[in-house]
Image (cartoon, rainbow, N blue to C red; front, top):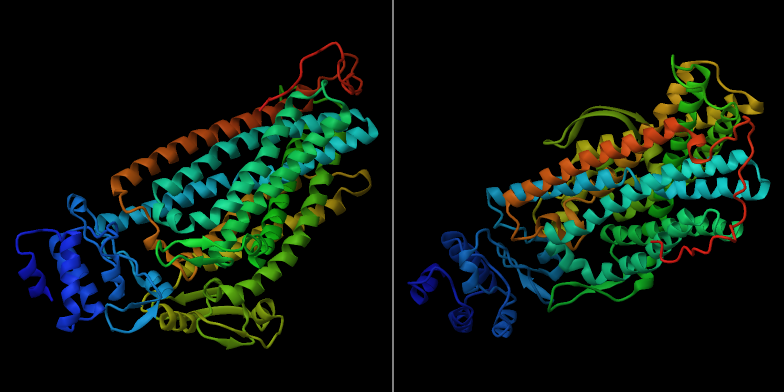
Length: 608
């Protein structure tokens, strides 16, 4: 085949589309298989001559389909660096190694990007690092936004029903902290959208038709509610009737939680794709049933788990802030201004509110986590096996508490377990069968072809334990806190307040480790069974470009983190008296801000 190529094209470093069509039209008479064509074009032409492979010319499409191969080596691409391995098309395609036929899905997933030379692989790795860093940073704000919106709405409802000044101050105080966090979440979230076009264009091309519907719903419905009514809430104090103003913050809370569902539905589709088909011509996923995407069992189960985790983080945020204020009141710093006497009762109530929210959300986390474990066992057995360092299929598998493993040889040297618990979590039966890493790997190779289908086992194993440990610790401390603060009591030891403050970073880390488990557990796929991560990265992005953007994002996010922390601490130190000043006589009465000022004709329209 190499001699045939050289004889037909002795003077060219590339194969033009017409020349390729002419060559392929002669191959059947020569008894050359589609697999040989693949090897020749990818191996002899691309590797030897450094010519990129692209799919552009459709005039010769019929010839390529007849041979179950579509490869067009375009003249314009000869100037580019880095090769693209073509994806297979049609119902069946030939294996370049064995001559066997596999489904288009199998060929699509096993066609790794051979053309990723040393720099290209580094670009892929940096692109993954960039996405991971920006996503983790963004998700520091998301759970607080989801939970705080509802907590602020509850506080304002309490003020609306009782008329007590302390609830008004609590509403405006925590509302200010919520708005700072909301703004940072919006800014960092925009970067996430840019990255799909910057570093992951092949992924965007494949999933665009499916993701378009849920993400459009998120933007046009949920985010519209948030952005519009949060403006009305900010500028509507003293201008809108109390009931209308209260409705605004509840609509913001509903919109925030609704927005989370549409985004999680898209993410769940990557782990358990439903309601789609792959177009044999464009090789893209095509949406066939939006209802199936939105009612995906992975979507609603993940949504309950994520939102409950968000309420744990938000509840512990309220706990931490309240503990700081109570500790500074009980053990004042020298030279510091003493807080108003009413703040003691106010922050005791918000402390208990945070404990209640965390305890209730913890119950939902446990129940939804149990359901997610069963979905993981059926839909993502490799993720579950890796998270438990379970190497072989096992009946009555135990839950691992601590393990020291040999990943290269696929075994554990030390594994401390609770017998049969993993089988119960995964199947609901203490004697149930749980699939192991080595056996799942063999099954995947039989379906998708040779390759390493294991994620980073060490990262998954410890992410799972840190997620559970830190999250449950925060819930346990909240339950203990409810007992310690019953009947008007407050702890009299400083270390107890410090423990309460420490639950906030623990909750945020638990959320982060949960998403690390979710996203890295899906590897090496971006869309399970359909698209590999190595085939999702933008082909034209260089190592230098990704390194520059990664550095820029890291620096910018570092600056934003300092700004966020500074603003939060400034308003926490100022206290509720900064947002609703106390009367000069020292009493604790709310200002006349209940009804709109009829003398002010300004209308807060289009405030967003």
